[in-house]
Image 1 (cartoon, rainbow, N blue to C red):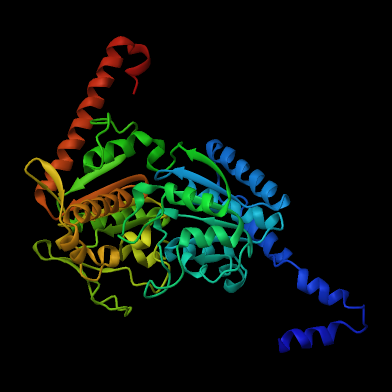
Image 2: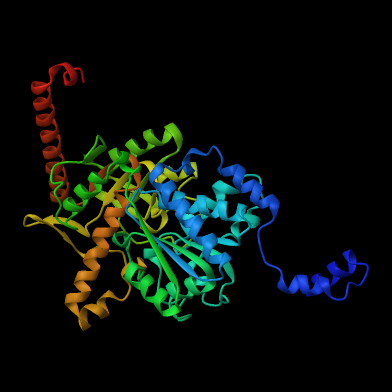
Length: 456
């Protein structure tokens, strides 16, 4: 208040019958012109944020309905459904920049800090970090927000939203409702198959429920064109079938050429990722959360959390000193689900732990093999005693969804090491069937039209 008083005293010399005070009181908070221009310049020509046609259509719809709702002084919600690699985050960042260019007070929101930190860093350029960090917020900070405090909130990874906020999960009513209440127009990007903790409650049904409760108009669309995983949603269907998430028609068909390799040593896996990372710093090693985070927050690279003794292999979980996804030295650290979800690389190396195994002819999950420091399944033991059937179903989905998410971070390919040898053999057998069918299909095509297909 003292700073405001001093500012008025310095720059306003003459009275104006309270017009200035009225302007301040009814004024609207919005980013400065310099921030608008700087963000637009950072986005322009950056290939990482280029949208394809399918995304542009939905993008234009969102801008149209946002402007319409705000101008007509009514609230609106837009739900964007899309699987891994459909460009949800790319569109979210484009929307943030364009809405700010259009003089709207917009916010990019995620529960997970990793995407916020990475995208804020990529966009800030020569700007001061604080000037852009204010546009990237966690989902737990809206329980105290006023109604329609923002023009637009863009909620990425909406499936990761929690019911309560705060360190002890005791603040607010529901993050979905609070985000919707805080803005005139809210956009929720969601993939329900990427819920990876027991606290993740974000769903399309819940968004519709609160929209109805608050009297909010709902608009929806779905992204289908894949550009992660080399452009194929056929691969996602194949992976779902392999992991036992759902039965699909893609038993032996990836739908495209995609570099997948199953290796027998974590040391080989690490070297493969190092080689790929040397090209453009876009390869990372990730692991299932089956090893304790023994550093307890201390940034000490000499302490290795993940140890696989039979291979004389050890590595540290991501230290958190820098932004793991883009810091070059991070290639020698392992990321977990919480530091890589919502982000993408050219290649990922995945260490599958003992929480996902192959036994008696099927892929099984085992929550007892998860690390005690993993908060993803906190409370599962109590739930197992109270309702073992529902608890088993929920934790099984979390483990499968975790590996599905890890195995869809690479645009060009991924490499896998399994601590369970039977799981490794199973993955190899599934891949061999893919290559066999692909070879047979090619031979058939060559026989039918040799002038076209025998050249490749």
